[in-house]
Image (tube, rainbow, N blue to C red; front, side):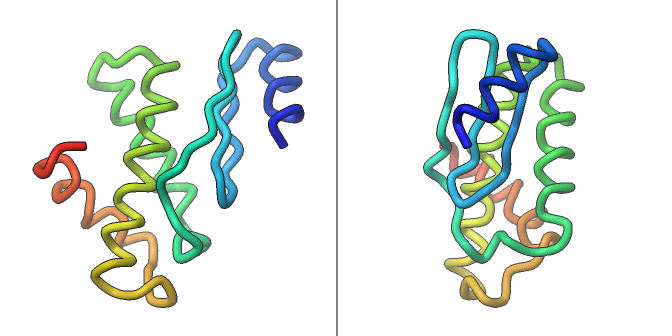
Length: 108
């Protein structure tokens, strides 16, 4: 998966985010493997939430490369918080959204 992300980034000159159990973010020179998140996040709409977090960071003037890495990490932390509260089998995309303010208030 790391090679696929890296190849895509190089071929198309883009930031690549491959969402999986260990989400991979590939930039021009670096590849990051995210350690936050859990299997409860494999739910409909979770990727849309991730996209919203990243684009929200970019809309707040955060560099797109940094926004991709930070957004993936924040998304995972929100999923972890939702899983702690509800149990992994009961997490849905709106639960991840609800945890954004909790994670940001607590700091990361």
